[in-house]
Image (cartoon, rainbow, N blue to C red; front, top):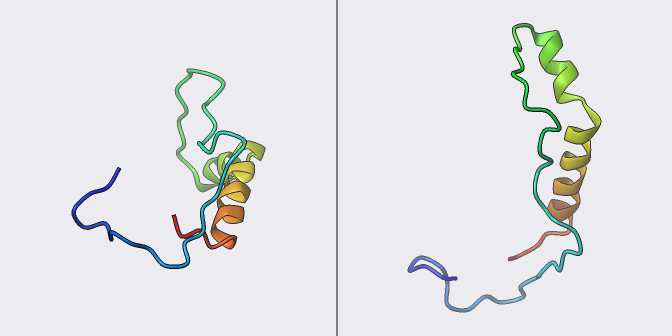
Length: 67
């Protein structure tokens, strides 16, 4: 689980124990999506699944996890 550049010891490390999977949601369809305007991108980017994922990442970032 380590590599040569990884420090051997870490002081004051914070470790998060997750009770749910921490991965982006998979698309519910296998269709091709064509985005050719900024409005289509903003509609897709503001969907509930994307916002939920961003909130989960922000919570982890705000907790200032060391590992």
